Length: 134
Image (cartoon, rainbow, N blue to C red):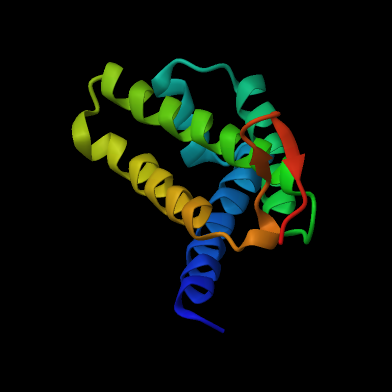
């Protein structure tokens, strides 16, 4: 196994653990999460919706195959985490409050950038059509 593949699995494992744990906490409305989301001004039903999609997104990232679904999962996590960074900054939490989602965003970006060809969706730039992974 080469260094890039090891880096991918380390980043992806950390990312999946963090987002999967967060998703489960969202689904069960864990008290610390409820307090944080209430502070940010989000309703509790939204927390559970996020939890549901986080768990499905982690499953999509870890499952073999389905490169298009993985693209959607990475995009969803980008929207979730970048939104969390902005929410904390807007609510006056400063860089300290925005640090955790920002770090997770960076780990997710590393996972995305290091993914092996078999887990990536290749696009034919000329036609915009998916190309089978090599």
